[in-house]
Image (cartoon, rainbow, N blue to C red; front, side):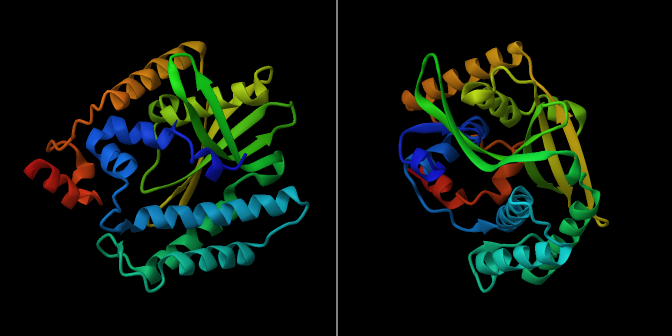
Length: 268
């Protein structure tokens, strides 16, 4: 089943769970009230276009073809133009615009092309949708693996692509909830008897672009903690608990695309 079909039914995902934990009101405004955001963040659009270009790159590899760096650039440029060229509702960070991000994307992908050890793995799938259920949660947990690879020993490697302004710490990777969810999904969807590794492939938007890979794995205790968290999130949602996280320490508030709706909610 396609991810678009899975989204038609009540569900939770790594992003929706993250939204609810970060700010319950954000979850409500966007996912229950289905209000349109006031703007589209440049970082989200940029990351999506990088993601699409990488999907094409690995699909070509799976099909037995080799995409050149120039072709990878062309794919990104096509996606970026379709998403952002002439779009007035994209909010750019200071010093950024359509052209600077076009160049930045190509530079990041050049680094990825030359630094990522593509030939060490067999591509099993790209953008593979998944769903699974948990005891105590009446809705499915859904999502899609960016990339699933297999190494020479037969180990399954679940890859998530990230564009980031900084490197990740080992602790961040080891505690990342999305990766925990991915391993739970892999075990529930045909890989329960396989050795599984998790990996962030991170394109880092520093002055000199960097590419870093971060490997991690999860234990049964990690799964138990995640299951508890998911069930508590669903309990809050089903009971209508949507607490806004508007404190001064929440850096997301400053650039939240639902700020106007949030202010209106407080004034009711």
